[in-house]
Length: 226
Length: 316
Image 1 (cartoon, rainbow over the protein chains, first blue to last red):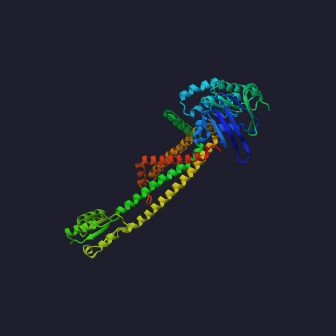
Image 2: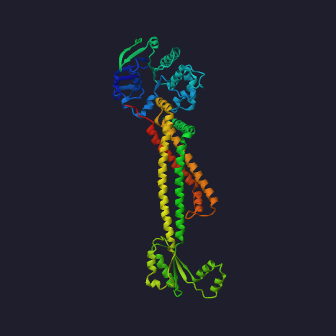
């Protein structure tokens, strides 16, 4: 599903953000990427969503070779990958429903289909009945679940969650993680980065540890030792 | 992408553009104000141009050359002369005015002077028959002049040829004024069109800045380039449409006011009546023109602005 082969990313003069990263993720896997700030986790995810290009190395996601990907094809790629951010990135002046519908509007789905799809997804993330709320009225955990609903409403095969629990207290963090597990059970590949030891240790999934732009360990059913 | 999706996308772009236009109206006021000025200048230039051209035409039409013939000139001789003159280049028409016709005209012109009329009716008609020559281009009557001054032609004439060429000075003045106004108009249009484009750039840049979070999210969610920039282009085209309508309204108002203020008069060489009529006759053409130019300015500047200020490239 995701293949990185000796990927290096260098920012101007500030040295290397990623150094010869090789990584393979199977379909339907749930992978956690851990490591201290500046280890290169976010850079890695930005390469996957094509917000940035690698300096060298090969990236193939869902059969798409990024080397041959043209700039104007990037929107099509992003429609196949759901992304969740630490800061939610919701539109504050749109309702919960509208925020989720937005992801469908921009790809040209008809209103009828949107009205049919969005409530079902809001149900999956446990926000049934809160369709008309505005983001500022919601708790952090609820907001993040709106963001997840938006990320999965187009049924992507890959969901990338960049520190989705970073701004949440433990209870809400677990709400979000449970939603991610649920989505994974439905068959979506999930890539999760987090700082939260407790979450990593309880999930018992594949854990990739990064440090200074390199992968220092990659183990299944692992625990996080900082 | 299927056709129905394209239609949906197009509708959404239109809707978003119009909504943003309404929401950002205060931002767009400067852009629209300058565009109204631009369009109004264009309209006035066209109307002024046509008015001057009309004035020149009217004066030109009145310029003629009168050749007075001796009473002894035979019909045959006269007809030959008419033919010869008609064959000259730059002659638009030759008209024969008989002695009787000349008298009629004279009587009409002096209708208010009965003494004179009595006097003239008591004698034989003293007025000569004449040929009225209208030149095509009043600036080039030299060939006609040379012909008329040939010896054998001169012999047929009773009086000196009359050139109502004193109007030539006036024509020259109007012609130079026309070309000055035309150039000033073009310069004004170019300058203001440029300024309005700069202001639209600025307006769009601000709108993009205000909505940067939303635009970032749209990009991350995989919105296409056209879907992101489309509403900005629609918004700028709306500036053009509103400005086009406003400029027509302004010009219309000015003509309405001036028509009542200077009732049926003309100021100097500017024939307001003609301008008003010209404007009214071409109302819909002008409306189309103003809308077209406004939409064009809006579209071009927003395409450039979105290209400049919306980043679609991935950083390397």
